[in-house]
Length: 104
Length: 104
DNA sequence: TATTTGCGCAATTAAATGGTTGCGCATATA
DNA sequence: TATATGCGCAACCATTTAATTGCGCAAATA
Image 1 (tube, rainbow over the protein chains, first blue to last red):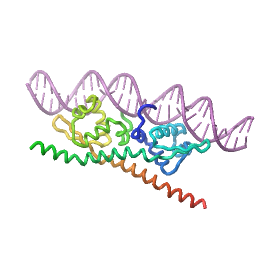
Image 2: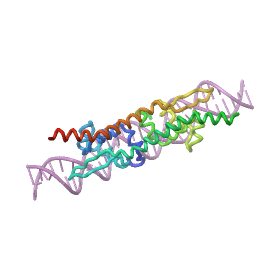
Image 3: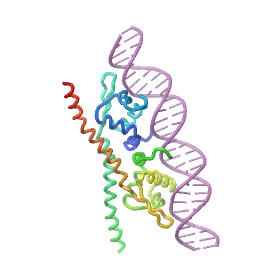
Image 4: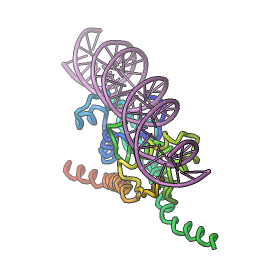
């Protein structure tokens, strides 16, 4: 659990997506998050680590409790890529036009 | 290479994202795609299989050649999820309002 | 102060992933 | 018809992943 660590890989796991949804509504501690899944606290903590490592979470320490919350800014990367893909897809007709033009 | 097979897992791999970008511009055969990466034809074929399995690609047989092209409709799932996450994030203040209201 | 609780970290394990090689089949080409 | 080419499939391998268990530390509580 070390190597690749980007936003795409982070949201590939369904549990992590669910955690993100939870934490987008309110900051929560690892134990509180784990209660929402049939999954151990440690398993959740590992998911939190993956999400934190790619800056999808912010944390705030409160005594011995750590509240995690969704950090939306890093999700822009995915959004941007989806948009670019859409742009490419829409521009393919122009490309075809270019090709036909050159074939004349 | 069998179990999970959804759009999120498909776009988690950087090579597959690059393939999608390529194929969004024009339909291509596996060999043609492989020429764009330093990666064997078989490796590309496996990526194509993953992408096809979750309906991110369409294919058209032309003799012994198979042209693959991007299928944008399935990407809506990711787009939709991102949008919903955004909505949740924006609604969190209302939730807080609710909580404060009930605390009075 | 003694005990409980919340948490991150390290080690272990089973399964999934990405890649390679070798194969067979169908379609082209000589 | 014989050979070359494009492709998918199966077997295999190294690495990564997700999860568990056990641990130690700091903060809360008795």
